[in-house]
Image (cartoon, rainbow over the protein chains, first blue to last red):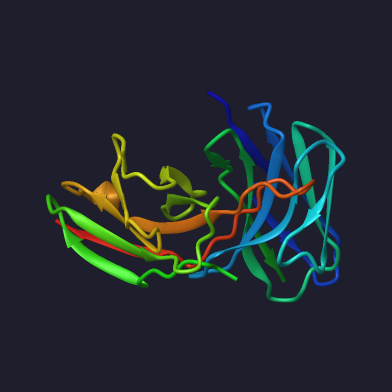
Length: 110
Length: 114
């Protein structure tokens, strides 16, 4: 079996700061995703990538950049953290039928 | 925009069989119906999926209406560990050069009482 590792698990940033979240998968999957989840709400797709060096915008891409330099890794950058922002960022990768998720990075902006 | 509609929450008691409904009236012919569940502090976990025929696995039974406009996830003999938010989603089929896009809604929160 494989695993998706997200780092860091907890991230505290300051208003206006540029913050980078990392995701690694060892499934050898082509497609990877970044989602944002706010408390009590559903997952919103930020970016996804169908192969190395590919990037596709999701429904919430404004304010974020992404990078897929290797097949196994997909990073997400918050370009300017918003004050009092709190959310969980989930990384996922897609196999033939299933999508596997990481445990998330919890962001708090002070 | 989520293309599925689920109740916000459902309540059950241990040992009961739970029916979680999902409406997807605008489903396309090549869209699969996927169910995921999520417990606090974890990412969503795959439960099951189907296209047209009912499916079953060790976790659940998925009943799909003949017109595919709705489906029901059936959880037999629920335990406390089945308490989670259940997401019914449609997997948009591969489009030219864009791969598969997955969109989630809020899901349905299942509460299980002892």
